[in-house]
Structure formats: C-alpha cells, structure tokens
Image 1: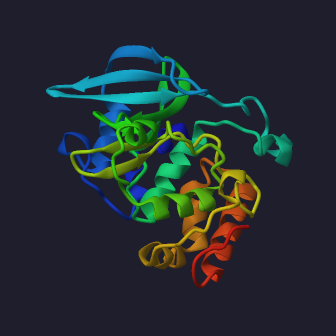
Image 2 (image 1 turned 60 degrees about the vertical axis):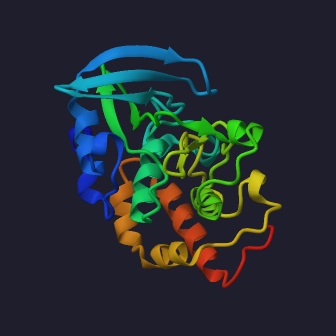
Length: 251
C-alpha cells in the first residue's frame, strides 16, 4: 500500500509549473526518490517539521517533512469521532494537496508520502523566498492571491488551523501558498469557529469545479488518507456549499 502512495501524479487532473521548472508529477517523483543530503529541525509551528535538502544530479530542492500522527497504533474500526475530530495527522496534508489539484486551485504545494529511516510522513516542497501573512501585514503590502478561494477551501476541508503563519506569498509571481493542513478534515458539516462570522463569496470557477467533482472519484483519490466518515462529511459540506446560490452568510 505504501508503495502505491509514493507517486500520486496519476490521480491529478491539473498540472502546474512549480519549483525548478518541474511539473507536479515531476516534483512528486523527485521528492519520492531524491537522496536527502541535509536534515534540519525547524522549530516554527506547533506540530514541528524538519527541513530536508534533496539532491539528484544538478537538481537540489528543499522540502518539509512532517511525521505527526496522533492516531498511530489505532485500528480503523476502533477510531471514534472524538479522536478524529482532535487529530493532527500528516495524512491530511497529502489529502489537502490532492483535493486542491482536483479543484484546479494550485495553492497547496506539492506533497507526497515518504518514509525516511523507516519513519513515515508527508514531504512538501519548500516555498523559497516566501513571506507569511504576518509579514505581509507588517510591510503594509496590498492583499495577494485569491483569499475567497482560500476561505471556501478551508470551509470544504473544515480547516481549524488557518493562521498567519501558514498563509505564504511569493512576491515575484504574486501567488498565495497554503501549508499545514494536518488539523483539517473533521467530521463536522458546519463551519470552523474561525469562519463562523464571515461573509464568504464563492468564486464562480470554484463553484463550477466543485460541482463537476464526482463523489466516486473523490473517494478513490482520498481513501488512502481519510476515513470513510471524513469523506462523507467532506461530501456533505460540498453539497451545502453548492446549495448556496450567492454569498455564504455567516453561520
């Protein structure tokens, strides 16, 4: 099963140009196979990550490796909703990437499953030269990227941990990059607390892509990373979003 998780490009509908001029599938293959030449602990963030440098021939990239898994050792049948709804799992970073690409958003950096020295985790392309939302505000820069799509995406995946440190921007291309989704995919069908009092407008292209996604395909793509109850909740949230004809009023 783990071997089938390594190369996830085959299930993607969209391909974007990314680090070192590589497409998403090329980046996935590089992350999956390139030797690690440096491994540094990064203290920022409550879940903790390691920054790896990978090198293959003349190509060198950095990536973040996250191993947090609060459900390790629990059997699928023995995992209750209370545990799922408090979980912090690297699996959800992979699920968020896959769903982002199915929706054609291209906001979540390429993320794969990889084992290092026998330890499983998610491996995510490092966004070089980025600033976070705190720095954007402190520098009084204008809004960057598609905030509306970010908010709808967070509603869809029930992301309880969006904060100024995991919204990144690259100023050269004016892009927004969303990282750290290991506290997402709860089984609730409403809104995360942080989004309850916000008016949210769903972009038309987001709505069209969400409506076009088939439940069977969502299950096929996300089943290795989410439990069925989480997928059912995701599909219910999708239905509720699509049922809103205009701006989504505060909950």
